[in-house]
Length: 138
Image 1 (tube, helix red, strand yellow):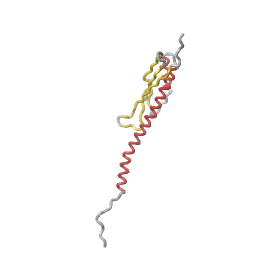
Image 2 (cartoon, one colour):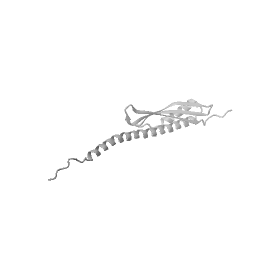
Image 3 (cartoon, rainbow, N blue to C red):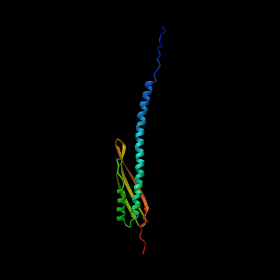
Image 4 (cartoon, helix red, strand yellow):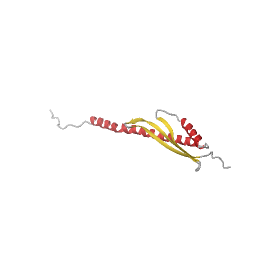
């Protein structure tokens, strides 16, 4: 009878399983963070579009009070969903001297994959539009 060799070969099945588990522990958080980044980029772009829409609506008015109402009405058309919690106008500067209206908005965003201490974010945007309803001088 032949004697068995004393040196045993390592099996690679257990090592492969451990490598796969460690790999998933690294890749899954990266994937979840990517979902949050894509959500923030998308909502930031939407906020910029809403700020521009509100500024365009305000630019069609002849005074600050009607411009404020028009911008608020434009922002009230924004549809809220599970991600966009709130959008509000933070500043409106109606300056007939320069002929521009500036509207600033803030959008509260609830992240789809909450991170401890960072479950919501606020996206801000500012848009400047020329006032197109300036009355002619007499």
